[in-house]
Amino acid sequence: MHLHFNDCPHNCNSNGKLFDRGLKRMVNCPYCEQKRKDLADGGEVVSDKGETTSLHKELGFSDEYLSSYYNFDDLVSSYERPLLVESSLGIVDSEVNALRGILLRGDLPEKSYCFGLGRKGSVDRLAFPLLASAYEKGGHVSKFLASRVYYSLYMQDKNLQEYYDLDLLVVLVNSGSSYKELMCVRGLMESRAVAGKATIFVTNNDIDEVLLLLGSVDEPSLYLASPYFMERKSTVDSHSYASDSLRGTTQNRDLGISMAELRDI
Image (cartoon, rainbow, N blue to C red; front, side, top):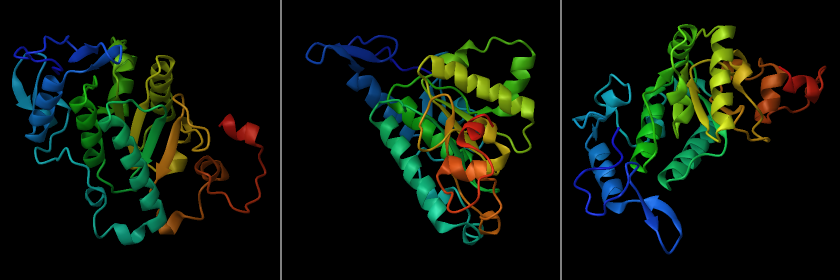
């Protein structure tokens, strides 16, 4: 998607950047940044072919009514919310807002994230605003990527370099993902981490089903995703010690496993 526009009066580069002599660094071109925002606010974007097209289609979403504005209440339906632990909802909302704040400042996150939206949460209504926010501020983004699609591309020996180079990548961890699929997208996260890039996962899986992707919230990392999951009241006491430990929610449960062993899971 275009970050620079041909009618720009400042003659910025192809990334929509200008050199600020006072700051002695590259900054967003104010004209192109405003134009990206105006387009995104109207649900439009300029494709790599120079054509104006819908933002949701360019980012891989089929729902034309998706909003680029984040609203936590859009993530969980009114009938599902009473089944979830309210405090866990607050944690997810807080972390999403913190991440959006980073993106809307034109910065990139310094850790990877995994957001669990419960069994029926609307993953597209989280992924779309994150990608739109990064694009508005000049970030290189691509379509919302499903773990199963990436695994298929990987197995076909496709050129995957574009996914390693993106400023922000949002990945859906499909329900029922296999061990091989999880290890494949973990490798994707690791490859991006080498380049200093974060990976954002969103999922309807339970936390214990995606442990391979997760690190600890107390030890933020690009190589393993910090987990922030909505908790169902019916399963709050049935998670493994490993997942509780990663989220910092262990209380007085007997380990039977060392922290060194946990890190190897």
